[in-house]
Length: 308
Image 1 (spheres, helix red, strand yellow):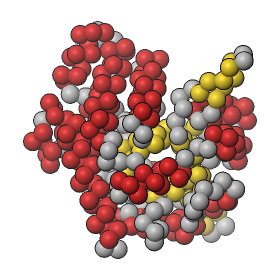
Image 2 (cartoon, one colour; image 1 turned 180 degrees about the horizontal axis):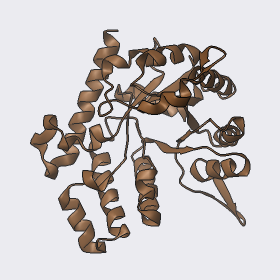
Image 3 (cartoon, one colour; image 1 turned 180 degrees about the vertical axis):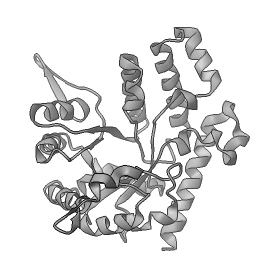
């Protein structure tokens, strides 16, 4: 799957992943009204609104980007109906030939970790049949329970030719409370990055491992150090746009070949119509605003890479 991701990045010239992290407050009134007219102001109605919102955005941007990243919490808040919308979103994105990164941030041990891995990336045995559950292409995982939490995912990735993005240095302001702590004079995130690189050595594609890392755009100098530590790991970079990251902050996340990183923007794309820059589109044409935001983001990143 890492080869497909690289191929699509090269084809689109846009190392961008669209974060499908819907909130009801993002969803235009006309979509909510239609969903509630059919299902009532219920969890099912909310999930239907989310699904229709996602579908229009995907239809508007799928030819511009290589990947999407649905954040499962935004669906789980609506219970079982929300999870159905998550699955419909995953399947629809795959029907558009998009790489799907399940932002699930799972982290547990033993059989629990194995069950998460099977549910999101692998298959589960039911009698004489096997079924793929959510069936994403990549998943985000939390390494802070140690190797017990990661190895079951790696095994499933080997079997299914899928991949991981392991949390190393996250974009949130309080990430440093633990991740920046010094151990033998070095920050914890560097030690985690070294372990990601070691895991990745046994899980190589042609030039890059299918074991990647999450490193926030809001910490470009740390990203520069981690790029050296993990030269053959793809880095998923959250924090662009709404969290303050911009193209000029990103150049150190990429290798000299122009590859090695994929940058996430969530509400900066999916709720672009709410920004002054794209207000001209209005709520009626929210998906067109999302397309314009993707085009602008791609141009910003290309310019930064060309001028580094």
